[in-house]
Length: 279
Length: 276
Ligand SMILES: Nc1ncnc2c1ncn2[C@@H]1O[C@H](COP(=O)(O)OP(=O)(O)O)[C@@H](O)[C@H]1O
Ligand SMILES: [Mg+2]
Image (cartoon, each protein chain N blue to C red):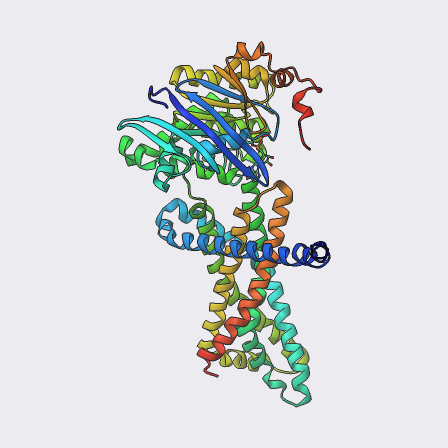
């Protein structure tokens, strides 16, 4: 009896309290959080017809402007440099085999299938996801969300739907833009440092990009946009605990966005590999 | 229980646990039609939580919160614990709610904030009444009227961030009464206001009650304001009502907890029992 309780004190209790219980509550919280996020997103999708209302459509356009147009400068710079880096790095390796004329193909394909959607998603996580989580979080802690509920204005329809839709659409638009800028950046390096002329580079890059590349890349972009906006809005709506809570919610939103983007990137890549390219 | 039709809000042994604390701990009280019921008590004692239970923003873990409404189709009884979405919407339409810090939407101007409930929920009513052309003008007319009542017409085009706390609260009040509700909940209506504006708001609360017959619930720790606007005053302590009485009964109370609170003494049963 005494020995048992001693064993329990030394071995069982610490494992239970320090390891099992935190893991359990973490898993519980994550499941709850994922469930809430899914339900919220479904509700937003059901409410899409309300965008036919002019007032709601204006809010959607405003969100498009905030998420999309305002992100153009950053996407431009990052796209340009990523294109230059890709071109430079692949050029370095290909030169060893005398195959540097293929840098355009490699740069174009990499940008379309992978780097375009990914870098745009990372930029929008930082620019748009964090600001959505902070904005909605502030609204939660200052009772603005409660005020909407009292007025029987559905916060998901009023706040979340325009943000999700704007982010998804702007993700796709910005990804196209990033790919084009990236190819341009690659061409600059091709001409200046690798010895591939602009003509050859653009011809090579645009020839190699197939419809399959384009729509698989853009599908990824749309899914990333959905992930960013749904995770950020969900964190924002569930924020409690004042300014500190807003900070916590925003941090969780950004970290989760990056995690899910990378995981979904891999998962979608393997599906695309299998079903689109049939390998 | 409310067979005489006089009771509009009724808390019956309501319990609510929030972040491990029993915020409502057997809360029981009734609010009668047309009266101004004031809830006083220290910060963090669950005054705002009590208000949130009335409009279904929170639901009791145990016990009952009942709202009765005298509508055209007779008496409707809302049990906050069991409401379908459509009932919840009807219940909330009965209420105007002034939040502690106004809770204006930061992206809209004062005027747009006050107009929001009408544009979002009542545009069709205005269109039926005044025609498509005039509906918007009529809404803005109403917005100006309500902003006038809280002396805020001059700030109609300002953003909330450009206003002082007191001005935000007044704009929030205009929004709370824009749909001419039957019951108005005021969460600390005079805190953060200068004394003159505080008196104005107190008068407005009385005015709305006397002229329009609304039932008011005022949460405050401004004891003078409580005496001025209240028909009955209740003091909340540890999740339940310590005492409920008329202003005179509260002024002359022998309950040591209430005495300590209204006199603002540091020593007493209120602070002795506090676990912090
Ligand atoms: N949404 C919530 N989640 C967790 N705890 C809450 C929530 N709302 C209020 N509380 C807690 O309930 C208690 C009472 O809060 P409140 O009703 O706001 O006090 P007050 O009487 O000052 O208005 C506080 O301790 C607060 O921390
Ligand atoms: Mg409060």
